[in-house]
Amino acid sequence: MTPHRLALLAACAAVLATTPLPGATQTQPPAAVGAALRTGATDGPGGLLRALNEAIRRDPSLVATPDAAAGLARAAAQQVSGFVGASLPVYRSITRTIVGAAPAPVRPAVEAAVTAEVEGFARADAQSVAPAPSGPAPAASPGAPGALEGIRLGAFTLYPSVDTAAYYDSNAFATRRSPRADFVTVVSPRAALESNLDRHWFAVSGGLDWTNYATYTSENTLDWRVDAEARLDITDTTQIYLGALASRDHEDRGTPDSVAFGESPVEYYDYRAYGGVGQRIGNVALRVGAAVERLVYEDSTTPFGPVNNADRDRTRTTAGVLARYEADPFIQPFVEALGDFRHYEQTQDDFGFRRSSSGWRVGMGARYRLDPTLTGEVFAGLMRQDYDDPLLRYIQTPAFNFSLRWRPRPGTLLVAYADRSIEETTLPGAAGYVYSVVGLRYEQRLMPNLTGILRASWGVSDFVGVVRTDDYYDASAGVRYRLTQNIAVGLDYRFTRRDANVDFADFSRHQVFLRAGFYY
Image (cartoon, helix red, strand yellow):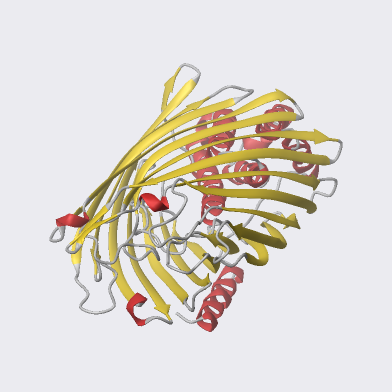
């Protein structure tokens, strides 16, 4: 898919989004309620939920009908995207608060309307993140609902789920010539335990991704992930954020550093920890934070002998500060500065290059809410990475990030994004590569329980120090059908392609997915 076709798809989505549906309305709560929710959100998720409860206490008519409740949910959910940390628990709390306050006779209808409204915001938050240069097939999930009952365990709620997928892959090894097709199944059980406290928030979650190929069983993988996250509401204006993650994952065959002749995918371990403080001083929100990530790769085996991947083991440390001026509810400018330090465990890689580096990123941007349906963020600046080896050229390039979430009417969602980053590589002579990506996702509710999805992205990996450029094209179309509140199924077609100026790196792939998921 060429860039001008991406633009055409975006234009078509915009036209569809602005075509009115019969009977489609968007009830808005009184302006004073919206203002109170915005003010409460300045004190974090706890402040937003307190403001929501107070608004319902003062005016029970806000939850007396499905339309009114959906409008209140929309006004509350609009505030969530600016919070630091996991947002899904906040969306769930908004849903529980409104549904729980609705009159019993209309509660089922209110739950359906509020769930549909909040899910749109939750998906918009999740889908506004730019994808990696190339990665494995999409997760097995056909689309978990944003509001779930869960299992109450005192001050916590347990959310178990199981996602499954069966798909056809026309090019399982991502090769240019003689592609080999296969049928694949994925089973992904997961569980998340989240707190229900008025102040503070804690969560721990874990899951598996068990992938099985029908013919090429050497591609079978068993990945796992566990993580924990916390937000401590020290005062109404001070929050502390903490988190940690450990996972075992694998590299898709289409990633730039994948071992071409490896007898199985490269597996690696990812360990992360982060912390930060958010402080509000008048109309200024300050955030200071740091994160550490350690990657450990397992060696590969090939028909020609073993391949050492220990020279890719590394630790990345980042630390930064952000200051945002929030006096205006529509445009909130900010400035940001970040240090980026990457340390390789081996002083030299297998080709004799010293790949450890230090870098930074600075810039300014704004979070915007142009109207109740259009929100996002834009950032522009400069970033640089300097390498220990004098033979590896430094990388300096403009930095940018853009996200837009547009919900012009109930049942319609358009997400657009752009991003640029400096990525690592072990390609001989290359310091790294600059990855730039633009993309969009368009969702349209076709029936009460049926949603259609279009997605497309275009990314470019520009390697520094060698003559290589990779273009990635990724497009998909699918549908999601909600059988019940807890069971969803989906059908997708996905096309991916990499065009490189080195012939051996080209490949294209067609995949057809059938998905099913159970969520409680």
